[in-house]
Length: 88
Image 1 (cartoon, rainbow, N blue to C red):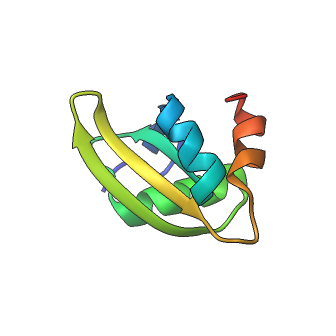
Image 2 (cartoon, rainbow, N blue to C red):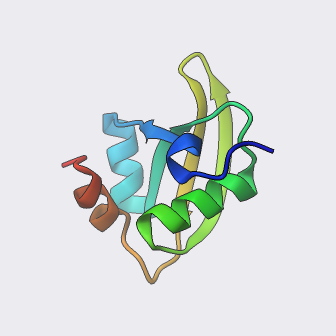
């Protein structure tokens, strides 16, 4: 188990044209996360940091590191979270 601070688990957002489309059409964001982070740890960190509820998390390993696609519940907007963290 890794350190419990949300900033140590969620490293930074991963922003491309495709991830912006993901945010607008699927209410999801993509983050680069710590290699040893588990799905429950990522979910807890994201919910604590941004005060939203997460519906689902998908994880993939790429040459850029471990990426987490974080889908929010319908009660929250990924675009609002994106505005708060300065994606737009």
